[in-house]
Amino acid sequence: MLNKGIFSSDKDDWETPQKLFEKLNDRYHFVIDLAATSKNAKCKNYYTVEDDALSKDWSKVNGPKWLNPPYGRQLGLWVKKAYISSIKCKDPIVLLIPARTDTSYWHEYIFYKAHIDFLRGRLKFEHNGSAGDSAPFPSAIVTYNFDTPWL
Image (cartoon, rainbow, N blue to C red; front, top):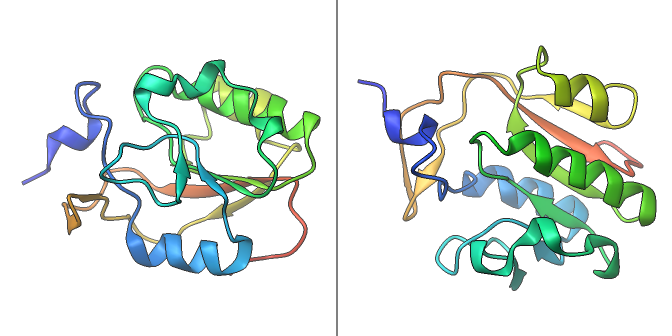
């Protein structure tokens, strides 16, 4: 049965699969997780809902930034923020997002502006360290200020 919690707007604290994050972190050495909770943060430094990451100036944080944003209705705002921040700083900003390439934010802020790696298969996002069911959508790693492949 599909775990509907991962796709509803009432639950935004699903975690990046640890093995995927480790592979990316080995390449980028992230300094901040831009959308986390104290329980699922992937970096020593992180922004929580209470910090209101969308109101922060991400370019003031030096170093590579990780973002697995909430997949609710504001996802496009997170992608826009990452794009705008990438113009202000030269550090990589790496996102894990649904590969919904028909959405306006993909066309406005990703295509021809970022490096895209489409992930094969469907990810199993985690909650409290345990994997849930496979996502019903494909995922992509979107990298702003990309220099070399991580795969």
